[in-house]
Image (cartoon, rainbow, N blue to C red):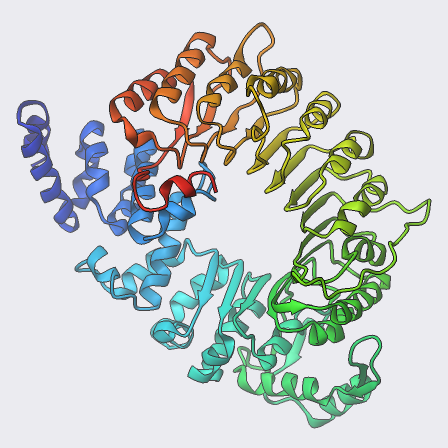
Length: 618
């Protein structure tokens, strides 16, 4: 059949070729063994018509035939088929994404959770075959109440699948743990025990009302436990000794001592519910290095935190605002943890916090943090009374290398210079939502000489043009992102800012990535092409102009300049969420000029749909 098919590709009409390809795709179970005989050109045409199961099985042949690029395109298309919201997700994905891995990971969850749509994607294939194939590519496993997925993995039928997951999964995400445990506590805990204690899971995410029992079981893996723990056959005196040692603990740093019997009982119950996996009734205990929690308050976390010596990364998000007193107790517990020489915590993030001056207080409590991310949301009515600004000691040197801050709090911005001056190792800074950015931009060149990544988002920089130019002229930045910063809002002539800006970027030899998305550049985007003008053009390799209301005519002029300047290095150009569909012909002409010099990220976005113009500049 292959010779006939090859013949038709050169002699028959496109319609006949398509019919033949679809026929081959439908009969791959029969023809799979002879796929090596297929010409590369025809194999390339066949790939988009295969389902994921056979796309995976013929991958080696596709690589030998040197059609790997077409293979990536095919996997990306499959991922879009699986994800209805792909247009929204695409904005946050990188061009070098492993589409096959993402696709098969999504497919695994759809089959495990018994999503009805999966039957339309994979016909005539058994559930077990699809799970076996896709489990190899699962790095993040999500368990929810849908389809009783957690309980099913504990069954004898799917035990081999669980064994594959033990080797592959690095991160475990649990949603609505209370409801999950009600479906079958023994089965769910067995799956967790296998993945965490016998598998490769070191990251755990608990979302939507985490169960306290489960939280206790998981956080016991954040301490430094013995290599093995007794299972259900544990002797009674073991628990007596444990209670004698850990009977009393403070419920928050400032609270009176209270009984911790509930935690001891949780650990004991956990041993009873986790079936023994060894003949002597003892199992090894895994270590969790990263914990991501949604919490209603910080009380429980504050009480347990000083013992989490294995934890490298902690992410906390309040389902309701985390208020001043709650946060104060947490900071004190954090200080206790960092006073322990065995502390491993290097990354901390907190969201939905309502507390003044938290940035400085946290860094004073844990000066050896390498990464800190804060999202501070103060109430509109300003019910919080600001405290006294915290002053660092003169000789304090923070270990901070990466800082992310989203806040409208004035005091936080005012304390920024002090924090930056004591963080000479800072190399990555992400700031969103702050007011009065002049002070920050003015301080950066002197306080942060090692800064390589700067991301400013949702900040009005319309009055900060000179500070931006000065920063570019006095830095070693490798990545700069000015997202939704209203750069041109007060310009009488946009060239008044863009010309010196482009010159300053060209002069910054270290810069490799520039993002100007959501600044409504429109026609002004043409000026950005001058980055590659002259004898000393910019060396950037990534340029993000997405969501800027760039019309096809504007893009065509931009492309003409790029074609004239001939950039020495290939450029990854992000044009997504621009109304380029307004004139497909002109868009096509512009793309033709750009393709010899650019890897273009674009989409099939419908700019005429409801709210599209608004979304393009959000």
